[in-house]
Image (cartoon, rainbow, N blue to C red; front, top):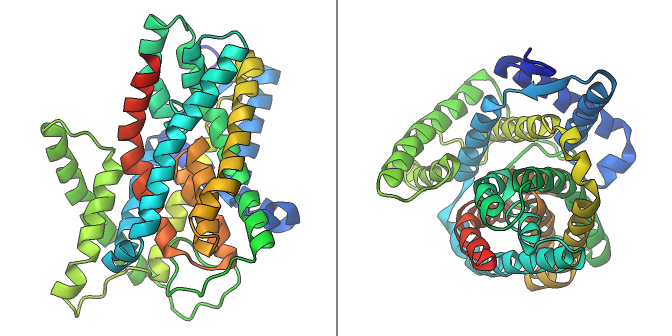
Length: 401
């Protein structure tokens, strides 16, 4: 222990994450409100764990510092599983929804920064603060906020830019985790949006539907083997792209490799059992995503944002309100007012304020109860993980300029 910091190594953090997930599952099972509003189990447990960490800090002065390297590996597992489930036929049929969602997302990056700058100026703060509590930390997440903070601190008169960016990204992640489910519930209630069920779970096992497919250790091991092969190839591809100056997160390269594999190998080797849309893959995918979210939220150091709470909460409240209104009155109608639009609305709330994994967790919570929407799990990660980062960098530079 260094000073007041209590380091928790990766294996122990991983184990605590599993406990946190089960705590969230138990609470969701007992509290009808959480279940009714589609709050993901790991979100419930993760927030409880973060609050416990806050209480420990306030009463003893000790700061829990989790090693979250394992968490980041789970993210690669999850998105590779999404790629395994992808079918080119779905992507072709999803061309129009993909284009609409991409266009709306690119517009919303601009809109988010306009809101941030306007509210920051109204509060007498530098406009760069509005960018930090805009697309830099919300759609961009922790990584983008950390990347831009030094430049904003040095050139735009915001010496605590890093603290503001991390605090905004943290609070945005919590908000994103909590509003997606209620938005979906509201849309389902008002529009009675429904869609025939499509074969096979994409993420997670349905809470209510009987599953005839059996799962055993062989099917789980086969899924893990396929995922590892795709990840290894994705790593090599990612290294090659970086060598030519084209930088992408590792999980994006693995997602794309898995999509290619899933749409070629079953046709080249038809006798091979491919795990796409199987119960075994759904279990591994659900485990990876749930544990990633649980570990992300339990690792929040809520005490670090206390000094920034006032102005930050005002700007963030404006961003949350704008996101909800945009989803209800722009995104949902333009996406078709159907079940796919409902699931994507929950997902958009997740990554407009938090991150792509949060978006998928929101969609998973909805589809577990109301039925699969495979296309949503293909097009939203492509938009959220691939196009957004590239566009966001250009928009941030434009606003700061």
